[in-house]
Amino acid sequence: MKILVTGGAGFIGSNLIRHLLNQPDISVLNIDKLVFPGSYHTIEDLDKLPGTKYRFAAIDICDYKALNDLFREYSPDAVMHLAAESHVDRSIATPESFIQSNIVGTYQLLNTAKHYWDDLETGRKDEFKFLHVSTDEVFGSLSLDAPPFSETHPYQPNSPYSASKAGSDHLARAWHHTYGLPVIISNCSNNYGPHQFPEKLIPLMIIKAVRGESLPVYGDGGNVRDWLYVEDHVTALFEIIKHGRPGDTYNIGGCCELSNNDVVQSICSILDELLHDSKHRPHKSLIRYVTDRPGHDRRYAMDITHINKTLGWSPKYEFKEALRKTVMWYLDNNHWCEKVMENSYNGERLGLI
Image (tube, rainbow, N blue to C red):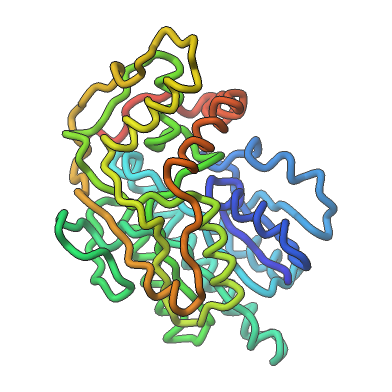
């Protein structure tokens, strides 16, 4: 099976590609424009693989001609679309790039895939799938006592990022219902794990705590997220591309609702245990509460009943175990952090109006 993955130099995309390449009879074409936050440093080890198993193309998904040429040359059996701008704070400050990447880029990719799919011979055409990977943030904010998001929950995006992803979801759905393109949509909760760019909460807290810098927690720290270890997420995506039904939508969550306070306190406890000689212990003394993010959604939670019943998927990792693995990875890979942050980010606050 030949799979074209977009955004494969990013956090989830790179973890997905490594998972795919560990499966028998799978080859991957990775498309990424290698502009923040995607980085060649995240995927440089993959270049050692034979070209028949893995290829990389540094192109922008907004470039229709380059996309069309690659589709015709590579002739994929499936597309897994993860390329997107994804940080809420950055979307508040610079929404234009989110509109361009997430909406215009998805349009160009869907359009290219449709024209390619139209020309496939009958057998391959029937088997082809296009998986559009999205977020729980398109559903908006939940009150603390509300039931989790289901696949039928109405969209109510509250940030430029989530609005751009909602727009791309609607395009993906429209290309299925209007043109028949075999599109599947997945919506996931908050991911964490290796290779996540250090502007996101968990890696940022790890890096700042090791440096002895203050740990900025937004508002009162009570905002709740459903935390999903990236390895669980990519196994769900693989099940969907193998067995998912075109036209369907699948919610993917970690069944692990925790507040930002809970998460940051857990990171501090793990660092206290691992860094015996740190002069910053206890690391929780570094926590500082700062002005909240504008329009900060209070809670997200995912109902995974549908994917569990139809595809048999459920998360395998417990948060405590997976968070510890994540902290250890960042402690062991400080060089990677320095490389991907070089000339682009140094832990500063983003998203203030």
